Image (cartoon, rainbow, N blue to C red; front, side, top):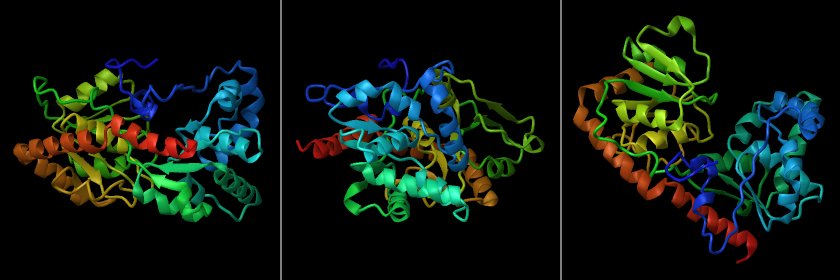
Length: 349
């Protein structure tokens, strides 16, 4: 259970900050206990769809919380794993409440399907029907709007972008902690390009917080890898780092947002890959609020790290501007305000 000040709230997607004088907000999630009858019954379908698409299909979650979903005035799904089965229920006429569907990477995954196979064509066709049953689809960056709308032929009025918001109260600078000289990189999604980072590091002291497997022959003694960090421990890593690197493959989904915004909220300069899915290029500006490098550019990333190492004043300037930007545009409270606008529209308030 989340409590203010005890952990970060961003993966509740603004729900703690909605106006409780107008909304009675509840949050439910799945239980992965394998003994649950619903999960055992749904497992064959869920596993097959997940294996084909690379995104889960949590039908058992919808069934587990069916009574709460049925009693709600509006349903918000925060990930595709939950959104797809809810949209399926809408498509079948079994869920009548408005569905606000937040999509994160569905278009990227679906484009990777080999549509010369009949089963993949069937999945794609079904998912397109399901998505059309959502009352509104939200993505977390402008660059993700066109790929999703074009692929699934969504009408423009049914899809919108709102920038992800981080918990600026939990993730914050701590001048008293000091700089330990390390370079930090955080994240476990498949869009991370740690190979480019390791090639560019060239013996530098790196700390990588990830669950991904990295090439052993590229991991030197100067590289420390871990994954079992509490949020408080991770905040300490951000606060002690000289700067943070978010290396990404060139995907059109807004990847690396949470780690990048957490680091920025902690007042750190972030070296970020300029991908097709960079969420708001007008605000994520090179040498102003972050340091942008091109995808797969080993020399460019090495130069970025060398520059920030050699210019501590620039690190502090960019980090300070980054913190200010997050407070003004990328906080969980601001995300909640924008989410509330869509909720009001769907409820016709």
